[in-house]
Length: 209
Image (tube, rainbow, N blue to C red; front, side, top):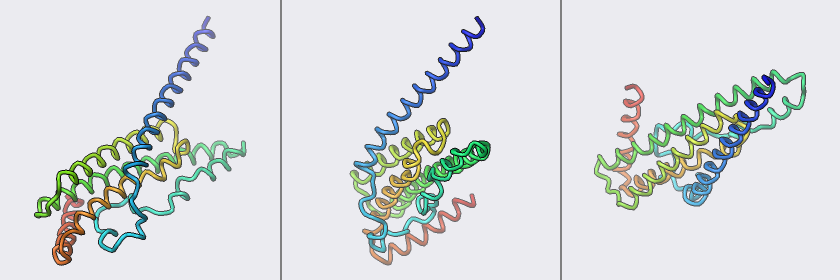
């Protein structure tokens, strides 16, 4: 009787995990479709003009490079294929999950930085249309929703189940950064330089505080 109860409980837990995994997968795919259609970078960073490159001081994770080396699953698969390295592969997976969660948290912070940058521009007299306000607000909300779902997925399923999604998680933040930089690019060169300097000082004071 006890063994039957144990088997039923194990099956229930397995089914619950499958349902949760399926739900997260569907939500992640829906958000991914939205991001591909509306939040993908309009053009590569290298192709943008100088006014659209690195104009938002304070971004950290969105500027990271070589994510394939950090979040690729090749090393993990190689370790997992050798039974004598099972403990090492489990530790490797745990470490990479910690790094992935930290990376996603930093991306969420970058979204907040871009939103604060928009508010900073408005406070300093830069005009923003209603359409631009809506675009940035929706982009920020959906980016945060996507990052939160991806963070939950990594926490529950590990960093290698959707490793491609983890590596591409910075795309919506890059898009938002480009939108913010686009607002600044409308200002005359002298005003733009003053705003950039003032924003950098604001970021320094913000981080210290």
